[in-house]
Image (cartoon, rainbow, N blue to C red; front, side, top):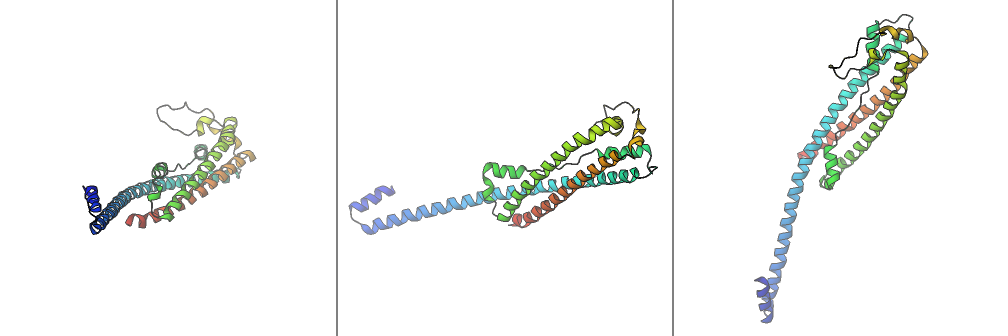
Length: 244
C-alpha cells in the first residue's frame, strides 16, 4: 500500500508527498530499530540478572567448600605436628591408638573442586559479553585460571603421597590400622600389628615422611586460603552488579 502510494505520487510529480512518504518510511524504520534494540536490551538485562544469581550461588558454594577444606587441612597439619613432636621424644606422650589415629589423619587429602556451572555456561554459549561489569568478567577469568593451578598442585601432591606415603605404610605399618574408613558396611578384620607404629616413630624416615606431609599440607593450605580470598573478592564484586 505504501509503495503503491509512493509510485502514484512520483507519477503525479507531487514531490512534497514523495518527501513525506520518504520521511514516514525512515521514521518507521528508525522506531522499529529502536524497539528491537530496546527489546534486546531488556532480554540481555534479564539474562544477565539470571547469570549473576547463578554466579553468586556458585561462589557461595565455592566459599563453603574452601572453608571446609581449610578446616580439614589445619586439622591434618596439627596431627602432623603432634606426631613430629612425639617422634622427637624417647617416650611418646600419646597412646598407641592416639598415634594411629593421628597417622590416619595424616593420610587424608583435602582437595578443592571449584563449581563453575555459571561461568561454563557463559563462555560456552558466548553470553559472556552480556556481563556489563568488566572488572567482574576479568575477576571470573582470573579466578578459574587460579583454580586450574590449584587443582594441578593438588594432583601433583596426591601423586607424591601415592609414591611416598602409601609405600611407607605398606613396608613399615599395619595398613588396616591407619587406613581411612570410607564405608561402614564392609569393615576390615581386626588389625594384628596395631603397635607397629611404636617401632618406627623414632626413626629419621618416619620424621621425614611427616615433614613431607607437612610441606604438602601447608602448600595446599596456602593455595586454598588464596582461593578463598579470590572467592571473597568476586562475591564483593557481585554485590553492586546485582543491585543494578
